[in-house]
Length: 362
Image: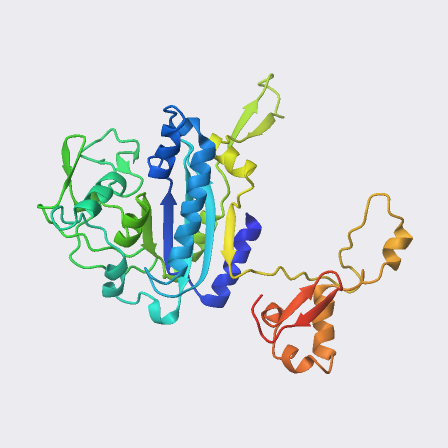
């Protein structure tokens, strides 16, 4: 996960801060899941984690493809996604997208065109109203429900209810404050109380109607959010540490590093589905001192044969030096730093040299 974090930061150096942060959560009541369970004599979704994992994988891949098609937000030039699993077992994904320069959100009107934090009109948009009511309402908590699970020290850890705003506002070190008008005519009923725009999780109507699940979307083009976002999506699974000590006077304790794996996560890993995805690819460039490059060899392989092996002395760094000195490639290579080298050359691991590919990004 640390490697994924550094790879994502490499995309930041190339394209700048990401523009959209999307969280996509599995809906166990999707028709594809219910249809299979109905044919299996009434099994519940928790009884078939393999079906939940497979359906979410298809929905997740389709969501990324749909966003990258440019239809909902415009042209996408880079993306990063990480799969995680809730404590109750359902899979969810955190995604970051970089938009092309002419599709970025620089104004409140741009943000309002793709992100909404208000309850839709029940008469004009009944289907969207039902989906928002089911998936995009937080709580209620606070005064309406002091015993809500999100309450920590008499405050909601998600900062709900939010303040009403007539217009979207940008803040320096946080997500934008989205438009939430104080409209008493728009509300939903939760645990027999009226819940208004103050409890709406930001969403995109087009994605919500297409996938019928919890899809939180945030504009994140502020540069101060970069470290938080990339560490958030590459933090790895939750862990718990438990200590066992038979003698309480002994200063040395025995620790067991524990991890809970839910059935959907177990099924996900058995199917060998990827946990992390990224586009465009990032090439890891190794650096070493002269004569101190890493060499891999078998346990029983004689050291003399390892030293004599053709190409064992060649590495990516040495190939970069060779390309800068070679008459046929130095015209291009001299214009590139080592970090920019993969944008014009491909490393051939079998033949141990860099191959020029006419500036194609690899």
